[in-house]
Image 1: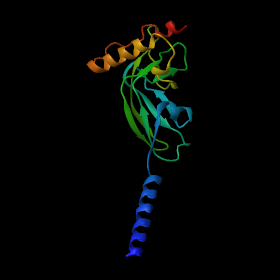
Image 2: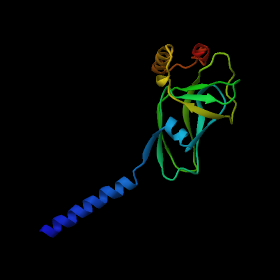
Image 3: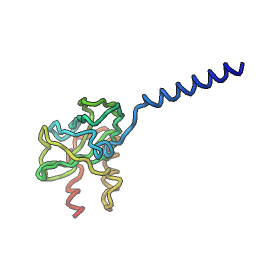
Image 4: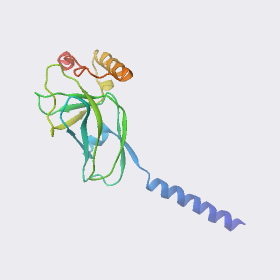
Length: 164
């Protein structure tokens, strides 16, 4: 009887170990980008599903990419639009894959839409920004999502000018 208990205990431990080895890690967009595991590419346009994620060869196991409303995407061109994520998404990714599904809104009032193919940087989410106007922008973003009406492209209305 004692041997059966020991064998049963070993089997249970082995199962938990096997499950933990194959568990998928969840990473925030900011963290995955800072590690160089993902690259964000504009699909062009200013509203909707406008950004795709390309995983790097450095990604050795599957992850869940956690994209959250108010994550900020910065355009490397000063002439083009910075974006804010408008919808939460948990996207499963494998090495060498491309995935869409990052919904964005424009953040700058006076800049053009990002061009297709432009690489975007990831900034900390709006909630982490030390500015008195950020709370207003986050609340506006929440209201846009609540009513599911995002016809207003430029929600920032010159937001970055207020940071100066």
